Length: 179
Image (cartoon, rainbow, N blue to C red; front, side):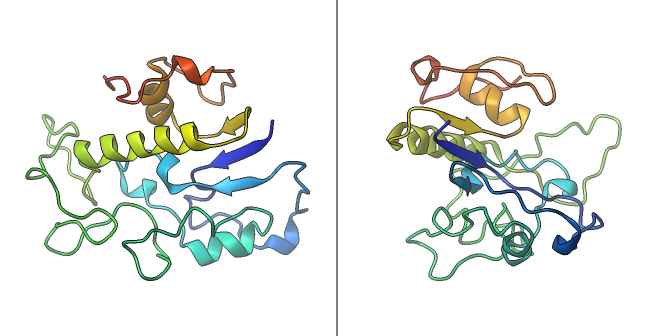
């Protein structure tokens, strides 16, 4: 393995966050946090910890190189999909192509605390992830992420914590349908 890629590391704000209580690993390869590889926002628990908190907890992970985007003048502290109060996308997800339609189950009266990530945002982000992987020079990359991301990239189902070698040539730029 030449590179480790993680979408995020801490979802639960009540988890033990005292870095002095944990031995900091010394990775033998670079590890980069990549927002493009984050899971599709479905529930409020999919909203990630602020960047500054993660940098303090995990100083051995690169939280800067993949967070710079030309359309954003400053580093986002909250780097997940978020909406303004009127539910229009902010600068991280500008210019929606259609009106956002609730895609999560609602037939049994389910209600959600936060809006889900619209399909066009997820599809665009997954295409950007594919292009990011395609542009890398490393031959072996460990991509640690959630089922929906892996399913979009490979078209395969993965069990929780499953490790599988996937040849990049089997991936499709347009992805696979998540069903």
